[in-house]
Length: 229
Picture 1 (spheres, rainbow, N blue to C red):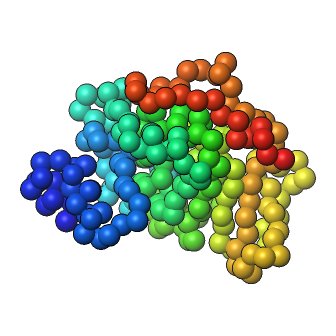
Picture 2 (cartoon, rainbow, N blue to C red; picture 1 turned 180 degrees about the horizontal axis):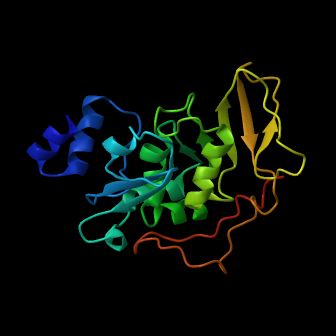
């Protein structure tokens, strides 16, 4: 439907707006980039796959993702509307969706990760209910989290929602990056996890490398991780 509307309207953004109207959507959809990009993925046994359709049907679990277009990865630009929405958000939710072919590709777009870092919003990662055959075959919840860290989300995930039939426990008392928190008000199959490391919740400071936010998007200092206990 989107493809047909894009052909008719001559604009992908306009096609999305038409869909929002037809579906009476309460929110808005902002693609992370308006450039035509291809997802490239590397499996845990070293195979390199081109395209989302191929990557999500990998014979073994994926470990890395990258984006490219005809002009090269350095020429991919973020959608300013998406960056503005992230900066203005109260909560940034990663997921639900396939880890390597739906969630990670968005943070690979230059400028998106920097916007999440600069945003005052808390960040929640919704871990998949079950592993996706091929793409995340056999990966644990911790390995899902680690994949995001490996793609630049280290210190940015405040909460993690995990579906599990048994209560979660920390792997060891020293695991700062993945601590299970029991909650009496949670459903019996659901637990919430959050990083407890002071470094993970430290404020992003102006002395950090300058984020590659596109021109025209106001920058602001983030105090979200220093103001929480």
